[in-house]
Image 1: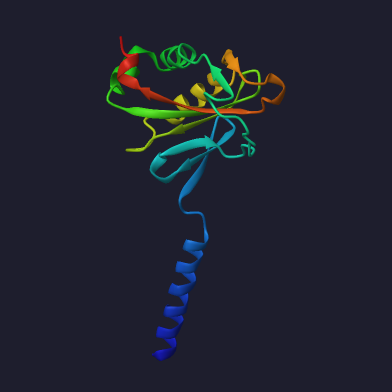
Image 2: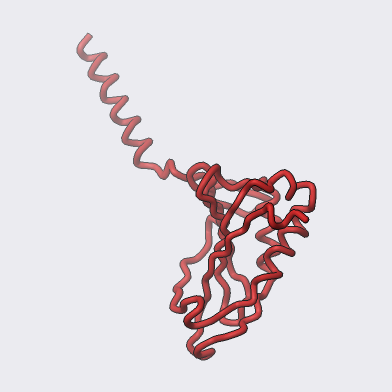
Length: 162
């Protein structure tokens, strides 16, 4: 009897340690051949294999981008009026990494509550469209020293419904 209990206890300890030893806080999903990493409760979605960017510039200090039309127009184009109406109570953040010319290299979808409201296909289509975009640089301190640029753009989806 003690032997069975000991085996069960060891099995439970092994199982618990293997669960906590894994990255249980995220899941990687493949969408149209591209791997995306979905963080806890879908509060962050990004490409699973994205590189680490070395950001040495500061928005507002080293550069300014004209991002006022590109982001809303892209979201309206991909999501459409009906879907935006469904999502109008939601807010998200979009984090962009751009090269020194404003060309989008990476986009991350963030949400502080209730997870990312977009379907897998919407995430794929939005990312694909954003990666085609280039934000005009309207001010920069030193173009020669300008490296990768990063900025976060808050999106209130109700403002896109018109």
